[in-house]
Length: 450
Image (cartoon, rainbow, N blue to C red; front, side, top):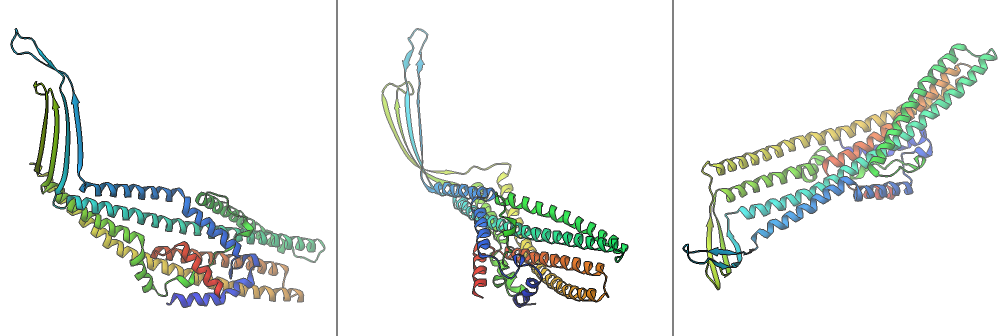
């Protein structure tokens, strides 16, 4: 199924829900000021959320580690010095000689070649820096999806509570009218009891709706670090149909290019390969260094006076553990590399599943919303006919009451289903790795151009 065509069909049918609900709950367009408010709030989340600040600190740390790794090719200067006191006696009858030895040593060590060890360490540090940078992007996408979901659920909870209150008020009013008619001898006591039963059910739904709103507010505050805007001013977020992939195949292709988890695992595989090269260079091959030393001595080795020593040498170091620890290290690094490759291959399969599930979730939510909108339309038509029949005396008041309650519930379900469509759409964008504030800006521009 072509999702773009389905979404365009949805856009043409949006007038249905706009007819059924009040203007301030309309889904066909959002108030521009309210749209700016939620975008500004999301931008603040992406600037100063603690989770994001943490991964940004990790990125700065990885940049420092990368700089340290690159510095391994620079010469290393070592300076050491000492001062002390020495006393030496030759023979039992001779006086002891006393000296104050001083020594200063300057050593310059330049790595010449280590068979790829340092290069592998630099590569691994560079990959870690890329991984940290990608983690920042991933965290921003996660926070953006959480922020959008929290805002959508806040709007859903507010509208659901409004409908619940409307249902309670409507049933209470109708119940009072029926009680008055019974008192005058023209009503039915059974209708009163049935109305009271419906009122109790509506009040129970009101309690649940109020609890859901409190939970939505709590989630908003926990994520945004601020109180939500005036609930009456909260508008639905436009669904970015125009930026969604047209087909499932397109969605999978985009995900393989943009999904951050897949990129992370690819980097981890490269890091495992760099670690394998580092182990080979560090533990299975020698290292060659060019060393220059200068020593300044005074009164050392029980010799009075100053001396200078200079040395330059080409040195090979090749430590090897006779318990074959180096071979074990290489084996461990090789297995870690294989493990990283298998995890990457598995992640590709998992990503395909996630994209398919997100795609199907959007189709399911869209279909559910369409049917619920149709149910609300049919219920509205039924209520109109029931009211006419009530005037003719062929319908009881309880029939009209039931129809009004059913309409309110249908409108509430349809609005909630629209919220599910929005969450499913943004979840799909997050799964394929393209969710960003720019998507919201493009979506708003698309809506404004129609």
